Image (cartoon, rainbow, N blue to C red; front, side, top):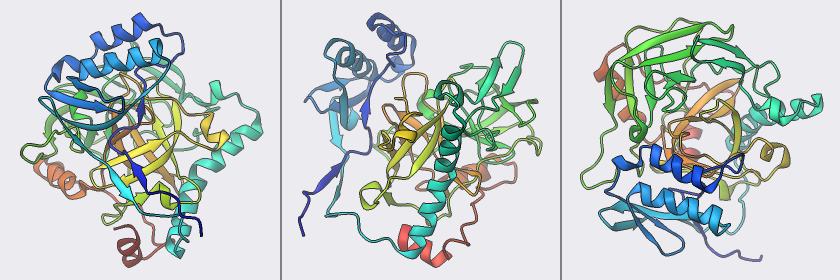
Length: 381
């Protein structure tokens, strides 16, 4: 057997680009940085693979513009910290090759892949152009609250009503995602304040609006940078949303670990951005406090891939299992993307929901047809 060298997975941040090439110039990239929220984080230190230490998020984002537009390269973040000190966050895998999967793994992974791949292949067979099939809405009139879901979207038959396309603070930015009829989550570093309105759209294009009345951020250990795995806020809405708006489910509580390096084929993930596109990424790793994605290898997935940029923070990522969205995380970092793991903070989120009131907890997707509770704990815990 030929042994492959030890793999080092930098999972806090993958290759990141601030701006897509689509119509952007270098000066517009810099303008995006200046108009963003990075000025709020001068104390955060980010280290990149070129040996540079960036003091403050603005300095880091400016370096991304320089790298992409002036040097035609990208930067990989290898650590984060504060006040000029970086802590490298890596996971070492000693796997020599993808190991044989257990029965429960095979069944669950097939269900995850089927949820997205079958729809992408169907859309490809139908001959719908990617530029059309990537759009969740065919019309978004935020001013007049008019939305029409796109029947040509590759994910048109999925209930994605948990995803808010607009809020009164950031408009199309600062995304929120429902995790119960009365609770939503978003990124702490791109937060949505009290008394803001979250807007949702049901499958019949009816608009539902709710007001944020309380919020709780995930608890952060002392001397820890919250952007390294604690970048999430849970909010309470003034009233339950109607049953026509479906909240996102989560994986079973003890389902906490997946390593992409252990798989023969990467698992697809559905993500959104601030333009409300149905993007596709591959799962890189779900480990400890973070979930990270990677650029898809399969061509029909890669057609729906885009780098995550300034403004995409807080948008959600999901597995699709049994035609249901299964919530994994919201974006903290760009490139393929990474963010705070819902599964790692399962109890913290439930505690926050309880403290906020409303009478709800996280709802798990039923995987009993694929694996027993004991199997899930043993294999994925």
